[in-house]
Image 1 (cartoon, rainbow, N blue to C red):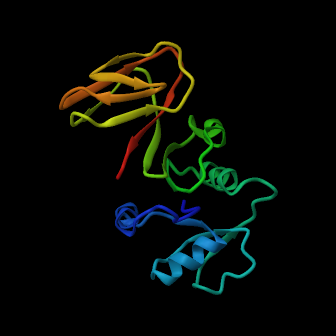
Image 2 (cartoon, rainbow, N blue to C red; image 1 turned 60 degrees about the vertical axis):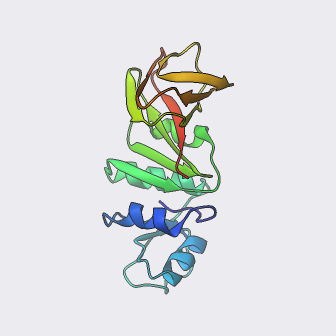
Length: 174
């Protein structure tokens, strides 16, 4: 799902589109991708789909583009979605996290939900942010450097333990 290409590199876009996913866009983003020679599949709330052939349109029906697209994806049993956007509100994604794997690319960050016991290998000095409210998470391989901000202490795995059903975490992609 490409809602905006602001602050997103062509290289990263190419990596996401490498596997020929279904590309859902807004009308404005459809024009940008068309100019780049990228085929789109679904346009939300579009009056004009003459840019390319075989484009499906879906109405937002008064919902945000994010919510309309997530409804479409979950109703059509998509297992996962990558979202490229210049606006991020965790609340927009929370109702869908148990129905579809979501990764959001926003402002140089990769944001995704994790369950307690999550661990990942990262090099030393990498920043990790917890984007959800959490009471006293147990961390290993991380040093707290600010409110919900951590840095990896060494090359290797870091881990998170917490009581909530899931947390949203963010890591830098730049």
